[in-house]
Image (cartoon, helix red, strand yellow):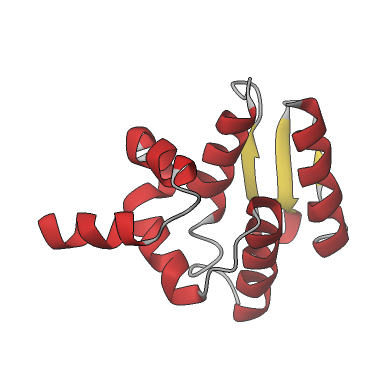
Length: 125
């Protein structure tokens, strides 16, 4: 897990150079926009991926300037090895943002980020 956290930090620092981990063990992704998430309960690579999805999906598609949305989306996509568009990120945020459905998030990760899992969720909702 430590290797993946270092990789996330490297990607984040490349795209958002002022990012850092503070003394409260929070990864501050974009200080200017207060984009961050806590790392204290991240024990596995799966936990880290769930955190990225839960807490970076919203700022990658809404709530901040288009400039920063694109950069957060770049961090998200590079770390997870995906290529989600802004519209797809809105879908991800709707069903997985703010850690609202951890079980579905794990299924999404295990499916190699099959967006159709979320689209089926929309149809059945």
